[in-house]
Length: 115
Image 1 (cartoon, rainbow, N blue to C red):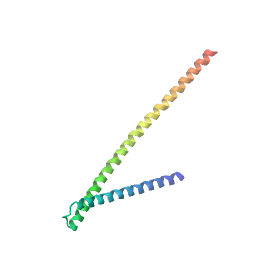
Image 2: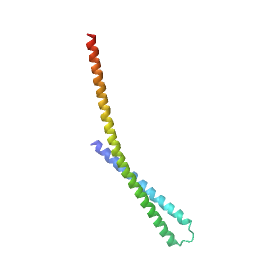
Image 3: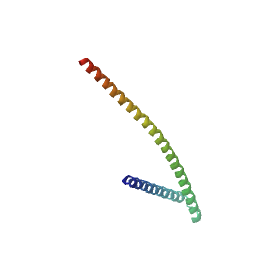
Image 4: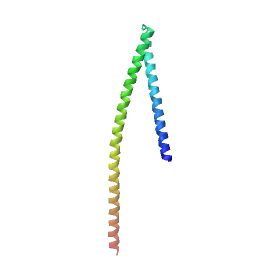
């Protein structure tokens, strides 16, 4: 019961963090759009608003594309590393069993020689 609640809280916090990061990204895009149009003083107010809107929308689209790529790559890496970890764990268990068997065999030999 507690684990379900903790997991739900963690997912909620992750969503909130994502929302806040995305909001910050959009605000940064708007600031850059304003800075861009400030360098073009001959634009009318309507033109300035249009350029800012298009610039910010383009920047948001680029950011979204990059986030999707990063998320996809992250999922690929998670799968790769999970598989590598599984293989490494299996090798470690096999090595531990081999060491234990070797130690037991050596102990048996020593006991046999001691008699």
